[in-house]
Length: 273
Ligand code: CA
Image 1 (cartoon, protein in one colour):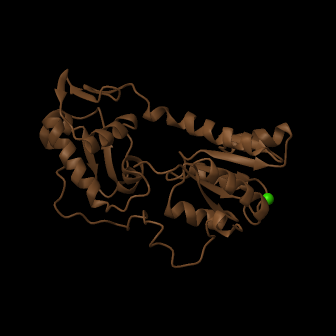
Image 2 (cartoon, protein in one colour):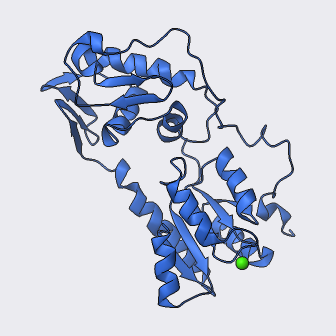
Image 3 (tube, helix red, strand yellow):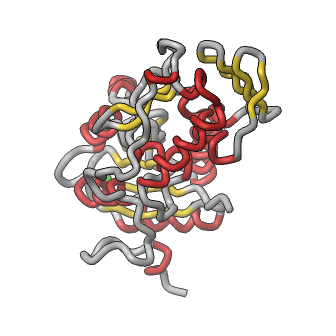
């Protein structure tokens, strides 16, 4: 089941954060509150939200600097950021957008406007999931008809293999770590070992057959890459080792068991009933 979209609210003023969180909650979002950059970073390390609402003026590192940093980080760079700012003049707006923010909202703002902006960035980031044909070399995938073919020959793939291939084809020639693939293909809220990725890559290669399967390369110590530039021979594909050394534990840990250190509670849980 698809979870409600998560929104990380980075805001040092509790009254504003609470107002935002209550409204997000009542409109089908799942807000989390962080008071500053350091606690926001901890949230991001644990679970990636669908959107970040980022206040400009924060104690410690500024929202502007955080936006720049998160944009440069491979893990967070695709997460839409909306800057919340009391600064309305044009140079500041431009600075916010230059830092990598997708949009900005000038305080004071109406909650209606806030919700509209959040929905808009989610829609803009969603075309990846929209229908269409992706082609890499002789491999073709149509996400509206769920068809995959290689040299015009239809191939049969399971649903997870299809999603995995879709993501790899949309981001071809780039190396993807196992944890990134877990985030992108399985979603960020599942408790799955990184080994699972290896199992599905193996199945995907088998389903693709010798030549198309060879397009998925194992990049030792880094992850996987789909490439059009492969010699069309089976021996160029690295076999998946039966035992895999996993360098770091997956950071996808469900809320219920993570967090030995105290953190900001769900904001709405603090509101009087
Ligand atoms: Ca502030």
